[in-house]
Image (cartoon, rainbow, N blue to C red; front, side, top):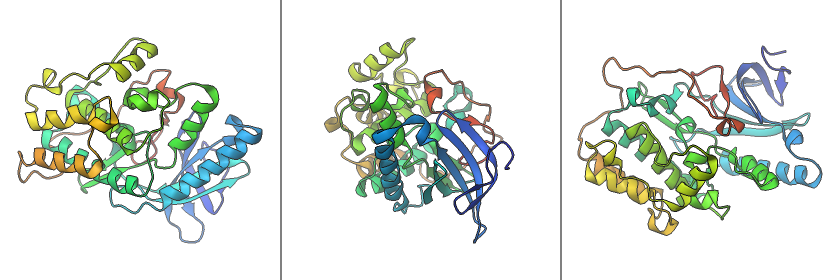
Length: 320
């Protein structure tokens, strides 16, 4: 058996080792039996979460959305290589990405330079524009789902095709699962979502990267959800005055309560971020001299931990 995992093979992949584990499955490093290619494989125990007709529907939904994600071909999206089911365990195999996620940079002591945060946001917006043009909505954009390798100039959005099972589970239980702080008002309200929901989540992520805090915070889940749905997000400049007005305007539009008031699509948001980035001509995608990411595991509350993976290996796309 692979260390830390109860089987040594998933479909055509040899399991090398466990990378992370969470409430709905695990992440393992796999190697294609024929090509030797390394992949990150996320597993989902569908039979543990669903039964009967619900299991059949969840399985169909998983493979339908995994196939849609597999068709996404964009340099800033982690490629989905394969999806399958092995002895009741569903899995999705993805491009193995070196680097780490953005979570460490949400702490005030680890802020990225403003132009670098804007550059990353623009890359993510363009990646979302491609996905949305293919009819794929991510549903779970957050720092832990954006991988970066700044030395190599890499920005990658990961976990397309995964959030569909979270949605199905929340529909079945009547609970909101995932990471509610990044969810759009319409997503929290149980309404139909489109690409503009992802743009709201991107706005939350950028707000946190720039300030070290979320735009909406509360001591209870009910109060948090009420604030996201009903209360206007604060101006980012009240927390970080050096943010230029053009960038503050992009965030304010992204965080609008009504989808119609947000950017029409990812390309429009990327263009707006490009205009803000013009304030810092010639900035490259690198960390400031001497800066290193804090790779300590971020604090997780019990609610977010329902789908957030424990990090056993922080060096690649093994995260939540």
